[in-house]
Amino acid sequence: MAPIALENEDHDRDAAFNKVLHGKSAEERGGIRSMLKKDPAAQKAAIEEYFKHWDNKAASTETEEIRESRKAEYATLTRHYYNLATDIYEYGWGSCFHFCRFAYGEGFYQGIARHEHFLAHMMGLRDGMKVLDVGCGVGGPAREIAKFSGVNITGLNNNDYQIERATRYAQKEGLSNQLSFRKGDFMQMSFPPETFDAIYAIEATVHAPSLEGVYSQIFRVLKPGGVFGVYEWLMTDDYDNSNPEHREIRLGIEQGNGISNMVKISEGLRAIKAAGFELEFHENLADRQDARPWYYPLDGDLRMAGSIGDILTIARMTKWGRFVAHNTIGAAERIGLVPKGTRKTADSLGLAADCLVAGAKLHLFTPMYLMVARKPKS
Ligand SMILES: CC(C)=CCC[C@@H](C)[C@H]1CC[C@H]2C3=C(CC[C@]12C)[C@@]1(C)CC[C@H](O)C[C@@H]1CC3
Image 1 (cartoon, protein in one colour):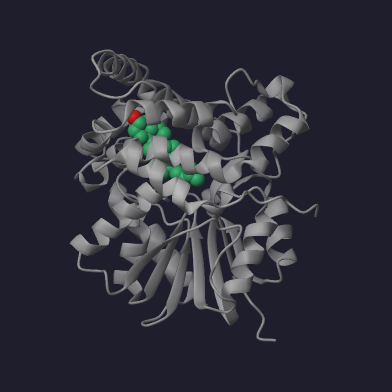
Image 2 (cartoon, rainbow, N blue to C red):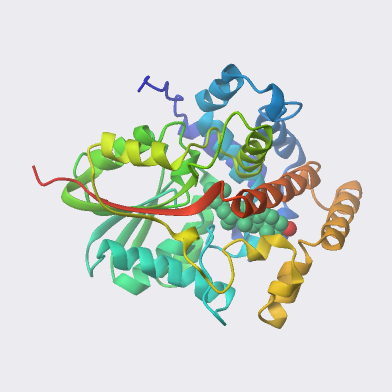
């Protein structure tokens, strides 16, 4: 594998930018309230920095150089993606930024929690273990897994705003004794070797420019005999890079979700083994026959509703729901209620939803390729 050039970390710069853009909005209760309190100039800078990678770049004309330039700036790209998307995620999805399977009659938050419990179960997490959560978001999964398994978790995250929110939620829930959060790039972790008993990553390592790179870092900071569990975002091996429709779907998923380069299942499996792990279990959980598919909250198909709450969740993703959201956010931008660029971000998330659903329906993409792997004892 050709070595990936890492971006220089500058935590002071990021913290200063975070302070200007988000101000005290991290203290707000919900995504919408936080959205109202951004600094317009800083938001403009974040929008420009993020969308310079995507505007006027079609899948049909994309070159290897364009992809490589995104990979070279993976950390900035992802950090700004979450500067822009975190409040919308919290408003529309809650504080666990991942998908899940849905059993018959299972509610959204039940399914989300079960997905986290399943990972903890498959990894054999036990009371008192020292665990790392790679790419912890605002700490929703870490809070749930800490309560479920009694482990102590360090959440690693490259976005100061998410860390601030994660820290506040942990305090509020009385979990500060079990949870702590650290700012950093998962491609260049600052933990000493062999620090953790177990490490997990939930739909986060896809932001890496190289899976082998991030898995190698995880391998280094894991104790010998320790376990690594991951829900990975991957293109299935049905993905054909010479097919224009497939390329368009992959690029849409990448743009809408802050990903510099998404690879296939075969590459994920190669990467985890190349990092030194012994693979104990792997399965595409999206292939299981569930009552409702993982993507139903994004599909805008009201026939999939399982409860009254579901009707609202699904309605916002229908053509009319999107029309209303697009225009409401546009009006809010015009009167200065939300900063300029909020609508562009929301539209990009709409593209994400469309391409995730299309990728799932054509069996080209999975957000839940589960791998459980062990670092050999010697
Ligand atoms: C980006 C990665 C690797 C993981 C995040 C997965 C999901 C939590 C997000 C992927 C697409 C997002 C969208 C929304 C919430 C969070 C996601 C499902 C919305 C439903 C939020 C509300 C907006 O009105 C529509 C969004 C569509 C995409």
